Image (cartoon, rainbow, N blue to C red; front, side, top):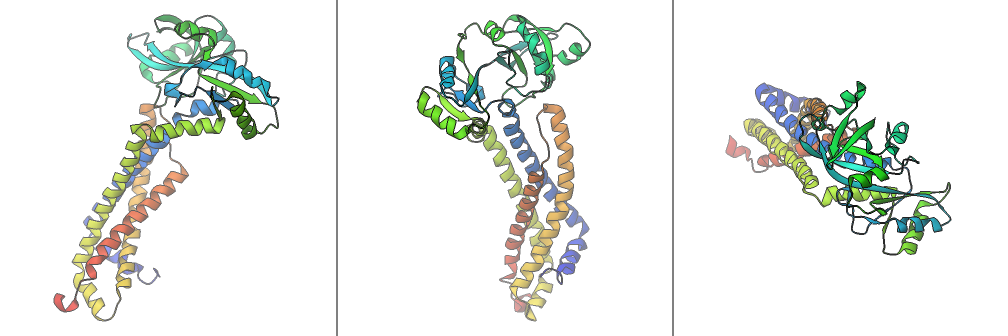
Length: 385
């Protein structure tokens, strides 16, 4: 269908090189806008579930009042230990989480971060650098620092690498950095600390021992996770919320997608980019049709149907979509790198997103072409000549 008419579409586009350049710049801008909004949205989802993904367990217990990692409510660890009554349960592990203020040891400026308290006798988090440093957090007032935290917390990583003793004030208590791990910043926390459950309770004296934030359950090999989770819901009733690890991850994603303004804003930004691109391409194609109205009317007078003109305009739209997408894609890669350096968020290009934006670009241009070609429906050759 396209083979015989493609030269006409291309010749019309390249006839006005300035107009073509403006059209491609507009499409590239729309693509960049969509790439950035989708990239930030996906980094939002990914960064906020890195902790969830690191959990080395099968089932998670939460307070029924907990909605996300930002707002976990404590519950009694006795509910967690009751899970040991089920034959399929291998072990249970209480986890404490809370946000507090870290004072930059150089500037003295406070900044909030996430503190995780675990039992150091067993590693329940698959985080690089954690396992080899677990023994150090058995010492009072010693914590592990996330090397991927933002620079506003101070030159912690550099000083630790130089062999210096690194101390800081957390919750008005002097602590020592005993090691480094790598987790990464998120939209909920710019930095992270991991310490023992005993040290955690020292940092948060208002937290009662035994009132935990997360209960992690490991099952015996071969156990059916869904079946055990269903049995736990019946056994523990409404005291706690029982989730599989995947359900815990999905719950966090859903919270950021639907219960916060951030997810909505990024989605709205993508829609706005699509609309902007549609308008730009429509203006270009409409001008192309208007400039060649006499030629189109001549073709119409000698018998060419409306379908022919639609195919030609859609070919122009497809050419614009592909040529405009390429510089938009390249510049988006550059902006992703700069965004990672500036925010430490996982803003990366994915194959799925590259295809998604390409399809959106083609659809955007096709919609514009279909609207622009409507001008030819009412074009009467007799009136034009």
